[in-house]
Image (cartoon, rainbow, N blue to C red; front, top):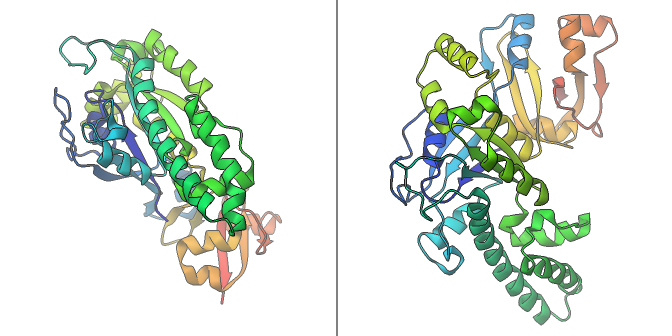
Length: 363
């Protein structure tokens, strides 16, 4: 099961710097001119989870395996992308392929770094990209309406048209799809269209080191307010600090973060936020060979969660032995949980909770 986040933004907002720090690589070229990134760069990032190391101490194993998400650094967008300007068509195709969008927004002043529009105005920058994404979605919905209208004898096609028309009207009012009040049936009708603005969005405010220490600035506060209005998330990060942190030892990183009053790196916060953004959860397997985190979508049943390990586990599922993370850690292991009646046998209908420590029995 692979989930990915696309990193988007105008040229020169710090996307590639943040991508390189996250992936601890120099895969994405970073420079002070527009369209430095042409083709998308990809990298895998481990999801920080302190619970893994607590479990490791209990079961006494040397091997710990976290979950991962894929990051895609996508070329900078400009006005007119929906009509093919700049790298528009390729950009929008790449955005359509990701599960969630991390929109990096420039919230710092620096005369030495070019801004494509000549001034710092993060909400304006967001609206430039949002407009292009919504125009592309408008085009997709209009084509779907035309296509379904021709299918006069297809009841499902006809039933979807009112939903498409509702969404089209909202898009024309500059409402992203994620902010529209849709019921489950309407959401299902839209799935096949893969609308870009239906994807979860997180605005990443790239600020300077002073704003990190102060908890933000006027630019980032404007972005946070905009995010709340449009059904998106938001957080602060300083690309410059994260780039420096990625080159330090663990001890040096801790000292560096303490100087800025940071309890964890901005990158850790960003990866966790991306994980939550996609509606993901984690369950654990903990044995002598390894402690491992497994990535699932929230709401998965026990057999579906077992299938993440191997499809045969799902096909031959009998039951799962489950202990809640808090019980497992408080009682210090599986045997104590069993003795205390905290190790439960769960069947095919069980919905896996984030943090469950699980053992599967299957044919």
